Length: 89
Image (cartoon, rainbow, N blue to C red; front, top):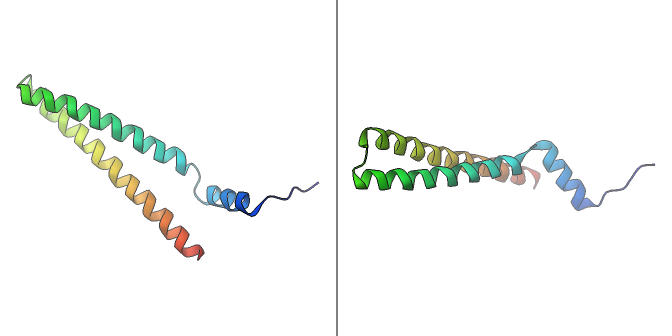
């Protein structure tokens, strides 16, 4: 017996089929971005205190890079989503 899906559910299923795991990817971007932000604050505090600068500065740069990469990936994901929505219209 074939089940009828509501138009809203069909639209959601089509969107998920075209972009699998989008919500999971965005969740990962948020988690890694927050983690990088917290790490950046910690290493920035170490730099401000002058503690172990040879390790703190590269670690801060890595954390800043993680945050920057997550922002870049988030924006790229949103551009793809908007382009897909505009192509449907």
